[in-house]
Amino acid sequence: MIVAVVAAMALLSAGALLCVVRLVIGPSLADRIVATDLLLVFLACGVGVYTVSTGRGIYLELMVVVGVLGFLGTVMVARFIERRGA
Amino acid sequence: MVLDVVAGVLLVLGAFLCLVAGIGLVRLPDVYARMHAATKPATLGLLLIALAGMLQVDDPADITELMLVVAVQFLTAPTGAHMVGRAAYRAGDLLGHETVCDELAGVTDVSAAE
Image (cartoon, rainbow over all chains, first blue to last red; front, side, top):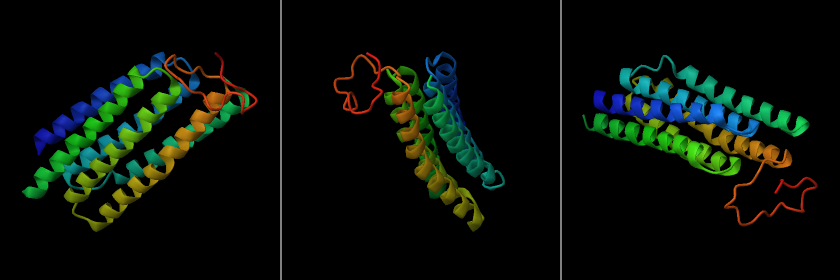
């Protein structure tokens, strides 16, 4: 079990690093908001892996909040791009 | 014991799918393709990790909460990606060089730049 948890955390960290790369180099604002949204999904996945490793769901509320916040941020920036263009 | 092994396999598989999403985000040519790479594998990966969590938690209320997480993700990920894609197209975001068909060209009043 500990092997699976460590491997999953390593894979998630590598993916999050790639997200940060796209967040830094992304040419347009749309690229950056897609990368931010995916980064929040990675955060939720990390909380899920922590929950599996301990067996207690004390941080599960964080998963819900992160999911909703990612969606709200994406919608807000999409509206902003449509109004202003960029 | 068996449940532990199943949960471990689901965990690694879900994390691997999330890594695939990250790789696609860096390697794909334009924002529309990146959008697909960011939503589809990551959503499935989150589902698999949540399934592993459902196998491991003790409290039934936690299982309900994990189902809520999955439901929220499945409802919001396509909606958000669609809104970002529409906004990017109207803002004139470039299509990749390998795009062979732009069905919105000439349909909307703002078409993407060459």
